[in-house]
Image (cartoon, rainbow over all chains, first blue to last red; front, side, top):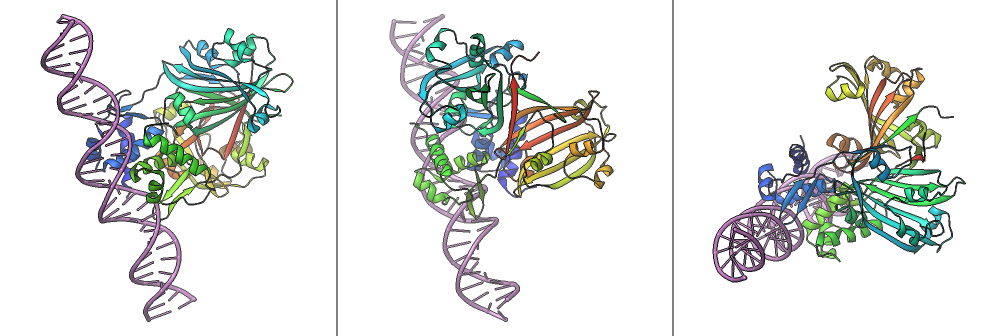
Length: 238
Length: 238
DNA sequence: CACTTGAAGTTGTCAGACAACTATCGCGAA
DNA sequence: TTCGCGATAGTTGTCTGACAACTTCAAGTG
């Protein structure tokens, strides 16, 4: 087919990875290169690409492993619920780790997103969601300090800002979520224990109260495959 | 920070790409490797990763270029409308290319998705959507031949299966779209003129008529950045 | 003017080598 | 026996240098 070793190689590698059981080690790079008829440098470029896609994971001194998937969490997007609630509804076991709460001040971007003056005091909540003890989502919420004080959280926070606000009786009506796909930045990649640039599903959303005011500005990053988000779309909305 | 050249390199490269105007050529690999203090092999691995993310494009003999973005198309996902309709609503200029219509027979997967017997005659419609003359989406629709005959299309098809069905007065009620992020397969990558494995936003959806029967099985692949899909999520659906 | 030829510059691929790290096995000490 | 530890083989990470394939453009040729 193709005259470029790299493209042939990607097809061969894809097939090899597909038929290799998750968790199993691939043959070593020198052997694989010989077996596939390319140099180790070219093979490594292809492997880097597959690692960026999240299909394999390389560990120096140990080997290259095919990554496996756990059961997917499925949810309709039109229902606003926390990942914790969603997991409980499905009877799955998720946990929260790397919880980080800090007080910051609004820069231009945050001020615009939250509709507050620049340099306003804000509260930022970051954490990693784990399923099957593997990181599957990285969530960053930013709220005005007036809405959520860092000290408030320490008392009774289980990982979901939404659940916390609802439990407190706050006015929360809806959220507008933008969905996209991106390669993970350094911060996100580190949190999710993947490589910078790996394929991630990305939500950028704003939470509104019943008066239409922005309550929360949220960035969510999901490793594909662990979640199934779906939307019901209807014709002729009027 | 990091002891691994590759991670430092990714940070440096990301910065360099970010501050380089779209469309402009980067300095050559040997020069860049010297400038960043790594070998050309390591640099090329990092560049492969960024190419997989769709941030740069390499052309043999010519150079490496930073890719630019056109204005994004924005749409609410809960409204089911074709990309063409959406573009017209926004006054943007999109076109259809690489239109391919073929008659196939249902394999196990298609039979399950469309709820028809295996080996049933089906019609498959594939095409590329272009904005600013660049490929931005790849769409594959598969329908029972009874619903859509290949010959029907030749008369009056403008790129959207949904618009065609609606214009014909078919019963189309809603669609269930699963949203995910994937690395492009060989077929998709070729159609979108990107590298296999590049980050793409992916919709897998079924179109239902008013009786709840599956009318169309659709796979959509979007290059991130050209589209802004959003969903309004509400609390306490009952 | 149209066409060819060549050179310079670029990315694509290769081979071999060494460094850094990991897992494992065997042996000696407690 | 059991624990700890060092040697060792095997793996990925990185480097160097080289050549092939391709693109571009300008000079030369008819």
